Image (tube, rainbow, N blue to C red; front, side):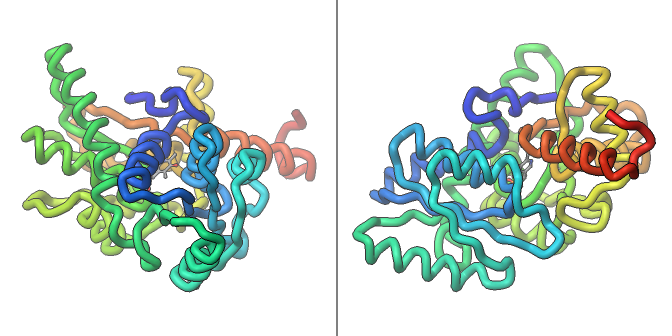
Length: 296
Ligand SMILES: *Cc1c(COP(=O)(O)O)cnc(C)c1O
């Protein structure tokens, strides 16, 4: 397992690498106000808020609230305590909401930087890509030092920034392993298109697996829960049900279906520790309601 959850800022994770890449890009472009976007449980929003606070850069997070999704999460709370401004919007209306926010910030005299690019969320693919090109190089270096070659790399795939970077890194290095993104939300078409965009032009096939989504973003089944419990009990490693736990469970399901038993597999732990505690909180509430089999 590549432990990107152990990167040294705000619980680590892929958003640590990606967030730093966006900050570098904002500096290059001469921006002075960071605008981020994500769900209420977004690791990206939390990490951007924390990174910006530590560098005294003003930050606003757009929070897409969806019916049925938890509105009060640890990530949101951490972002708030880092002093980020918050604007709530609907997932169906993001472009308009982003446009309004950017206009308002310009009115206040700032040069805002929306990390996804334009209002439609396009244009900053190259900046995001760079983060996991670097991570791919670390993996390739590790393999070379140890004389090991992975046959497969698995990880949780959402927006495609992580997978796109890995695919671009593999292309540059002439790597041969399969990079398999386990979708946490998107269907195969939408997910594959997004990864392709972040990966940049290349001849390679994109492996975005959408069969292990358990019904959608934030949803999970008892197997995902089992994996989370096992990983904590056997290795002391926290996984969460939205990203890493779902992806690890998806990887096991994939290997059972397609594997020969001879694969040499790397799983990238993409972080998201606060979501593990949201999960525990939810379990606690279930116990308290008497739904669980055991009281804590
Ligand atoms: C955002 C996130 C992902 C998905 O990464 P993308 O680059 O959006 O595909 C996976 N795991 C965790 C913990 C995340 O926060």
